[in-house]
Image 1 (cartoon, rainbow, N blue to C red):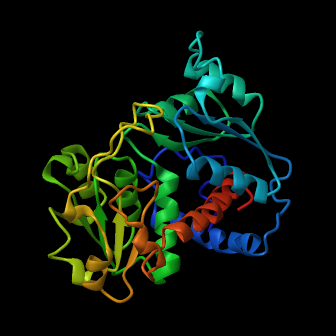
Image 2 (cartoon, one colour):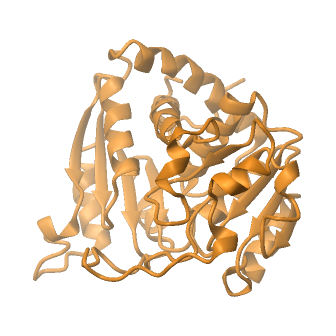
Length: 316
């Protein structure tokens, strides 16, 4: 099929089709060869990727850097606005920052605490913009790599029983269901009542035909699940920057912790994903189990983002 991502912004998963995702997944599979050989290609050796991270990041920022460098391209930008005029006394506007970066790079990846900020940036510049997380709105490339991880680990995205567990206000919890709506999976949103999906997001899922149910705990469905996608129920505000490491962390309620006891009651081939960073909802003891897929999930993320950057450059 024709490349659906060439020259396009990636701001949301709304409107992204199954065929679009399958195009990307096929390309990501070929990109894994580069990763497995611990080498680089020259596919994007003539391109530069700009990173504008107005919020802290580990995996998203570093995997985009890795992806671009694995494709032979260069990377520039900032990981903390405090090191720029956007975060000091001048409080330079988003518009001016991205217009300036447009002169330096061929693509722009933006993470921002404000909903819709990447879309504002895309309106201001002529180079393609990727949303790396905007406030409580979306995180489209995280959802793409999550879906790709499920496909690679389970062999399909169709016919699966998938539980998404945690605080449904988080942006990852919005984008992943939009991706899964393209496949015949049954999705369960598992959260405390006060952290359930909003009416507006329920309406979005109904619009795209997602098959979903909302539950207060995993027990009724645990034996049927193929995938648990886990986040915490005690997550920091996206509107805040770094939080004092000495601050006390709230304890996750038992129904939203996935431990060995829960795994023992599930299918033998149940897998657990988590976008990380984690707290007590994902005990370290799970790392040694066959279900743990969250570190390989990060590796798949590099391949997926390589595929996306190549496709956006018209070389996918």
